[in-house]
Image 1 (cartoon, rainbow, N blue to C red):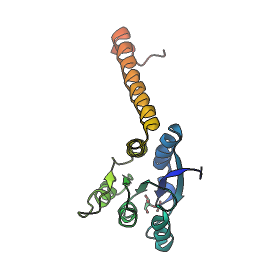
Image 2 (cartoon, helix red, strand yellow):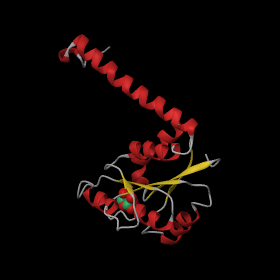
Image 3 (cartoon, rainbow, N blue to C red):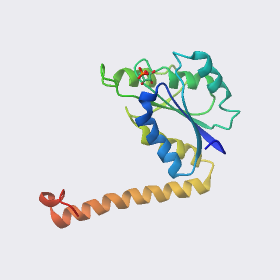
Image 4 (cartoon, rainbow, N blue to C red):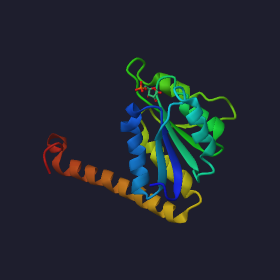
Length: 173
Ligand code: RP5
């Protein structure tokens, strides 16, 4: 996994893994190398600083950072790493993830974080693929294939709805 690493996936806690693994699955699907770490910006700021500061030199071109509550991890990645940072707000029990969302999306001018939906691991992975595809035609071709398959999947669902009607749509095929 460490060969040809282009993306850094970082999360504030292992409790974020169910969401962050969705981003990793997309990168696996597209054959993009990544490193994945659990690093807490609050609980181990020194380790976090070294990781984010060294990311560019390790070949990382995009960081996907997920965190919850007072979610400073993505924003601090953007402060330390010069290339794109995608932030994923985690759902929280106390405030439903609005705390995470606002912490990540409300960055000060000059330090952007591309924020996806609460729990949006899959879209974060796809956004990273799209960013890398800007300068990689082979990856762009794979992306276009993925988009075509997605369209086909919806068309098949509609064809089935037209055929069996809503009353039988949920029946086993
Ligand atoms: C953040 O606090 C993490 O990103 C996580 O979403 C949240 C809760 O962390 P744990 O208490 O589950 O470790 O740092």
